[in-house]
Length: 241
Image (cartoon, rainbow, N blue to C red; front, side):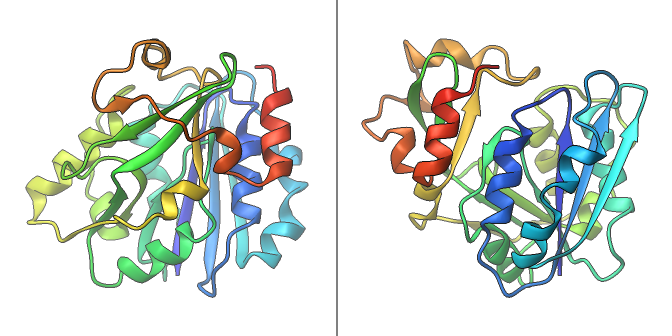
């Protein structure tokens, strides 16, 4: 089984991640761990509205954690790993403002049986205010979209406070612990998911790439509507952060 971990910091757009998790296609058992902190939490009742659909998608339990104090993302990941189910083999790192492609959980559950780290080198970013898309593409670095890691490695992270570039921090640290067996997903599954910009409080500089993209960001003709179901595309088009 696998643990889907969802750290949230003042992100009303968390509905996007929840909708994608409700549409997962998997025969693997999984749990969902949500960790909110400080100001403007969505609150447990917001997440409870998805419980029935999550169960249909194979989620056997939902854990909600809230801290009135601000907790760094680096510490959130480790805390969520610590409270995950004893039988969980891996931590799926789900962004609160991203729509996961529908077999993301199944891929992670399968590949973490034989690999330490998985990621996809490509993803479409959609800016919710500018209504524009760009392509992120950078292979061979380990860090990308759809990341997941063996649980025992996440548990070895130090109690260090990191607010930004946390994905790279995690990857570089665990890569020093052991020679990682990495699965880089080069299938086209990434085309059925989308990452968003303009509605979170961490990645504040990426918006510039939508007008003048520089590698690893590229212009693209792939629209957000190509990546998600029509209902979700309509919700995103109407969404105003």
